[in-house]
Length: 258
Ligand code: DGL
Image 1 (cartoon, helix red, strand yellow):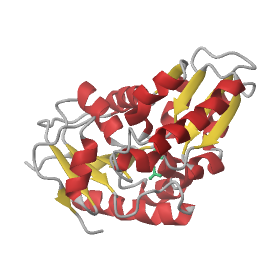
Image 2 (cartoon, rainbow, N blue to C red):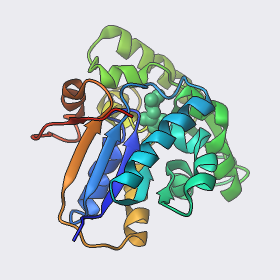
Image 3 (tube, rainbow, N blue to C red):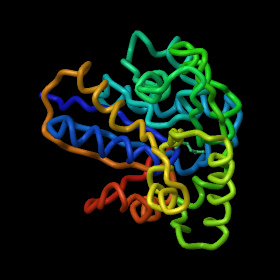
């Protein structure tokens, strides 16, 4: 029998923060993870570029016995999912990140509460979080911050570089002033920075990974064997080093040319 896989995609190691939660709640499934490191960052690209990169990954998944796909990338969910859905809906079941978790992100918030969103430029510009949140409660204020540069800190492991800390502080200062009591980690790379965030600003941080994993678990049913295959589209050794916080990958990371 041919193994079935869940395809998980992101521009780099960020989506591993999602994959680790998927694996926690479904250790019996098989996964193919693709980090598109050749095209990272997605957050400063146009919607069409992000759509094209992701389309190639979805076609790769189709050839590799994937039937369910988790878009472990806020940027792709924000700017390309609607188009991709039209194109792939008869071939793949796709779980987009933002649309799947928005209701969990605002659980317990009341009218006129403020929630802050840390995300890539493309996600912020798309206003997708605001739209999804305001469908649930139009009286919640969303303060969205373009955190361009955070992804590079994670991919290049620049956690203790003074410039990184300065950049993070400047963004969290704005969050503090906004009065938000909850912050959405609106890019899958940001859970890698959570300990730094907590030291700078003591608020509630919402990591979408747990809610997304539960949702996927409720809707997927096939028998696997717990196999995970990792791929990147350039520099697999660098990918492996940067992945460490969420996956200490022992096997080789494959290189795919899309
Ligand atoms: N980790 C991705 C996200 O959740 C993309 C980051 C990037 O490549 O800019 O938005």
